[in-house]
Image (tube, rainbow, N blue to C red):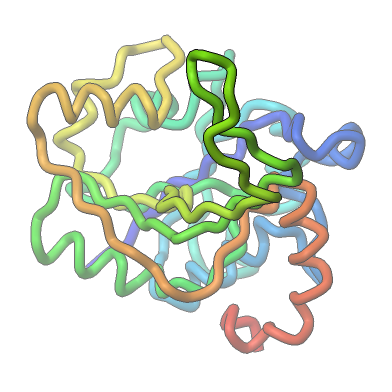
Amino acid sequence: MTKRAVILAGGRGTRLRPYTVVLPKPLMPIGDYPILEVVIRQLAHDGFDHITMAVNHQAELIRAFFGDGSKWNLRIDYSLEEKPLGTIGPLRLIPDLPSHFLVMNGDVLTDIDFGEFHRTHSDANRLFTISSYEREQHVDFGVLVSGEDGMLRDFKEKPTSTFEVSMGVYMVSREILPLIPIGQPYGFDNLMHDLLRANRPVQVSRFGGYWLDIGRPDDYMKAIDEFQSMRQRFRLD
């Protein structure tokens, strides 16, 4: 079965400035490769044969680097946004999407098996599947809990909370495309609210492996430190 992926690679990388002043975020280096090449190599390894890159900011640099994908024995084409359309809006510009396809951010470093994620969703004929991750969020302040009377009720010194977060990796059914407005910004958050209001099923698949969002400066530094020792986990050797 043909495996299709759409990679969202049109962001401006504002959280990574000043690094992204010269390079678009998907071309930021991790070890020997730009992060987006790591993703491409993983998708090729996991059986994907057609990738569409949704591009906007510095699109010409991304296109010049990746070309038609023949270097990785797959097909790469490009969908150009004339204006930023958010995370889900670009899907309406791609006319030939199959019944089920992968959508992911171009700045994700993970060892998830993309092929298995695709198979599980497609075999069950799901509408939308989110790959999620348990992420600890540390607060570098003493947190006060006070009442309406202004009296202290509790104090927590630099607490850590755990949240289930989206990894920026999704499996999508073509059935959701009519929900996306044409030519208007429409994000993942908009789609989730619309599906919840319509009582449409959204599957959440918890992932227990490795995941970093390298659009965050702290995660980017961590990825650089850990990449070489984890190359085999990323299916690069």
